[in-house]
Length: 444
Image: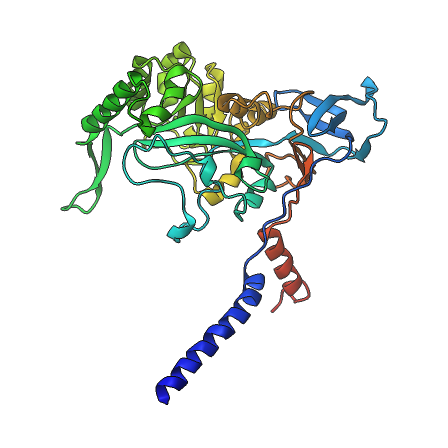
């Protein structure tokens, strides 16, 4: 009898949980904004200050777009035809091209300490066949946090091992990954093994820098893989060797994640040894030390350490802040990334550019590092990165300088002409607690 009562109690509790859980879920978990509908009518934005993204600024400007494509960009004096357009008058507010975020795990990781929400890496050192696009989660609650800072395009990148797999460039709006993809499998990512590694000294309990005993073995493993890939004819089926073919034939880029100057040199020599034509350095902390090699080989850099401390104690404390300017001044194609920071901090991409602008770069050039240059490096400059006729209408409106966290306030954003919903979890929380405390005295 007692056992039967216990069973009945368990069944009742289970039934009650099924009834209560959906109600609790609606109050605890926010709903990601619904993807925007296709552009339904031609739109003209007038009275704006347009930041083209390539260094140009147009005052009292006009931009028109239809069916997701920019049809005209100019000033009011150009008498652009506005007939049959829905006109938005901005009265001196700012229009920017959507920012382009390279090297991010956005959409692959949701909660860092919950493994079931992570789909960013596979076990093992060689994972060339991994494709980030098919794992991209368009319902991630982190995506809206990027969009309300103007980041509308992102290179979603896998991590882990020596070869992590292929990234894809995604629009930050869509029902599924097929909707969101802008360029599929744009490049393969290699983490070049370090020559040195840090190890805790058992006697002093401090960290020492020592030679990496596994360096030669890791490099030899990469040589073996690329030698096999170079002679691979498709039989027998090997997914890793097959995935490397676009890199070897030049249809995809090789993104080498590397920071140390010697390692940069070694990695470039390795790639050129297999005839790889399209190379991008990601990280590039010491890129300035090997600028002559980068210039000679026409290799771009995605610099990721703007908001970081210098690697060596004797270097200038502001070295990371001014490195983008120094690379640009040296003639290197440089973009700014956020991959060296935590995922939740990558929404600060425009403020990384703002820091670079405060340390040598003029404001519009700093802007181009996260718009035009990043788009060119990722191979999507024909679609995004600058506001030009024929390109996607991927842009946003801000009341102030989008590179300045004090004045930046994104009011509206469009991805391929679709007006997206900028309201997210953080705005919801802000409004909730603003209302809670707005009537309370500060003297309490």
